[in-house]
Image (cartoon, rainbow, N blue to C red; front, side, top):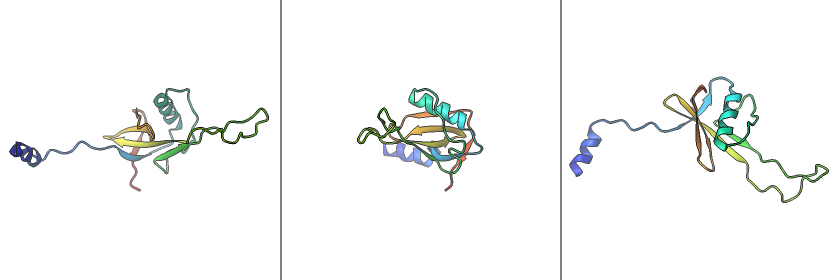
Length: 116
């Protein structure tokens, strides 16, 4: 058994590439918004034009509950902000919800490894 394990290590098999943090190569906010909507099974959302251009992380603040006059109701913000990250593996981009770890492929998005 040990000999088989050692043989497997010695054959030079390369490990499966891991997901790496990524940045977009050009603005693609519409495709990112569609991917996040699929991921969260929701309607389309709006994201900034420069999303994932400088950072691999995006934070979406939840809307604060308001009263009939539009004033924030203290203690009514029930959820923490949602955080998403852009990832890449084998030239395929992904968006992942950090809390749930749900991941959605983005086949039409062009991104590169974030070396920072």
